[in-house]
Length: 146
Image 1 (tube, rainbow, N blue to C red):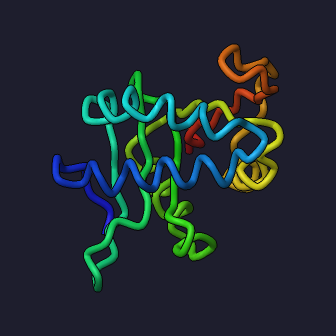
Image 2 (cartoon, helix red, strand yellow):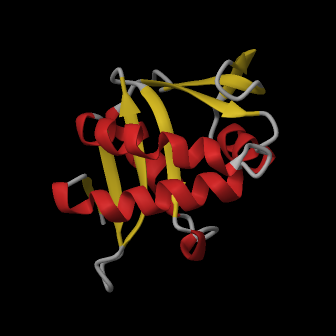
């Protein structure tokens, strides 16, 4: 089930955020993620966040977060639940409610780049993330008009 974030979801969502970032971005110091944990924990409840909750266990297995209406701040799936289509379901849900989406993804996170390209996101530009000095792509998606 995909639903809007509730206040009591925050601890589970933040654990997924931290663990997933550390694993997916092993080219960035772990300190970067732990140093930003408190800021994200404070900002996240104000963002537009949808969680994937397992219908059987009621455990949150992933989430997608938006800022500025159509900017995907991230899609995160708990490690044990990865490669089971949860990220795709979250993105498909977003495609139903958004007409355009934009995101930034580190070039070294090739698994994520491939995922977004499979999901019809196109690379618009390349930059360097000032906070990590890592190269990233800016990718966009737009709903096809009939």
